[in-house]
Image: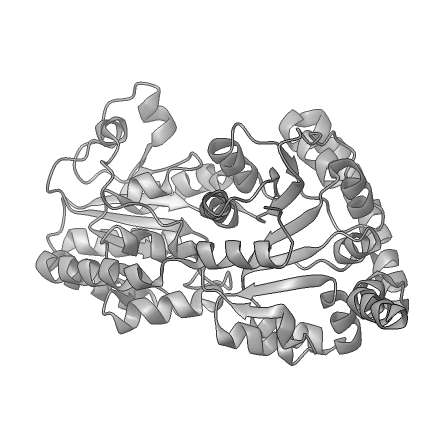
Length: 455
């Protein structure tokens, strides 16, 4: 009986020991990390002298900054979202965990400035920290400061050194609303033995769909650690019943019934393509359409202002409008140069173009947000990170894929000239999303049942 119990315990901890073991790959990966650190740290020090916020973020990335201590409301659980979109998923997941009686002290982490700003906006009362870079000593130092009882990774973020350090400290890790793209699978298959060892640090993969799960199985992740729970993005989508911001409407000068095209989460060269499409449509008589540009990265605002000016004329920038500049007249393009505004801007949209998908390899951005508000969606063909979402909207007739700039212009012209058709497509998208909600509740039950959070 005693021997049987010992064998059972050994079997339980074997994957964790395997994940914690030092390998030749770790030595090589660590050496590369040290070389990268030799380049990065001087740059970070220079930025710290010029920009206090950037310096603080880099101190956090190097795990040199302070990490909020647990406040004692329950076991500390670390929730990590790499950037703005993933951080937003933490909110519905926390609501679902609260609903099932979980006891926890959450720590919210992110990597990018946009993600950290969103964490501050959504979780002002919760402890927050910067996610450590995967250099040799940083994850371990961070975990020693943060003291999490478990780690919940939103969508992906499987870093070798972090996983090894978590396993060394017997900290269980879960991936929820998980994605594992074919690109990631191909990269891991080239070091399949190492990948299998590191993935054994993860005790739960709550995946979005079967294709993502199957790619993990090919890397020897056992079925016992994989469940299909769906995509938390459906639970974090905006409520279409909420009233649009009167302050934002006033700043943007949007009149009731005005046609508005929102280019959301754009990357280069998408803004130029949208601006040229707008200029061509003006020549075809569509002069009073409101064009609003919301770039993914606001630090590009100065360059984008110049680009838009050269094609459409000077755009009104939201920061200047809020500082007292006159509301823009009909037809004046608008550039949103602040973070956290996209959902509010989508509420005014007649049509949304969702970026990261045309003329670049960003893998797409979240086209479900405008669809949830009843807005028809255009996007490019490169949506590797949102394949299921894109297929859902296309099958519902709520979106259109535009292969190039000419197709983008044609689709915009079609929908702007046929607003009833655009509205019908938008309504179809909103209806198509409703049956897919509930992933947060399913994930919360799995986390409780597997002991990754406490009751």
